[in-house]
Image (cartoon, rainbow, N blue to C red; front, side, top):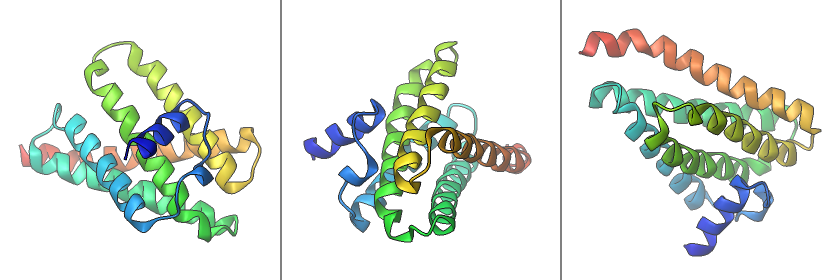
Length: 159
């Protein structure tokens, strides 16, 4: 367990690659669960529990769907477990770091760091240069924000 946490921290520090993680469905499930829980905790600061669950679930689904899609497009579907584990695991770490920083300017720096981490992971998983990986990472963020904004009226009605 400690070795896996160290791997995720090294991914966040851009010292490890997604292929350093084991290709395990269990790890992917655990990383997605951690990503969902961290996202839910953050969303709970702004929404009631029900809409927060929906938002965190949608964000997790978007991450999985986009990851699967770009890997299929680049003809590397066999890398899904490691790539999704890396993105979800590092996403959970970043969200846990972000939690106490939600109302501070440091959150912007954390967002940039998260984009860099995702680009690093995607660069290795997709075998692309850093520039396209950054664009894909920004695309992931834009789709995630768009889905969150589309769900916002649903959560407003739940209050």
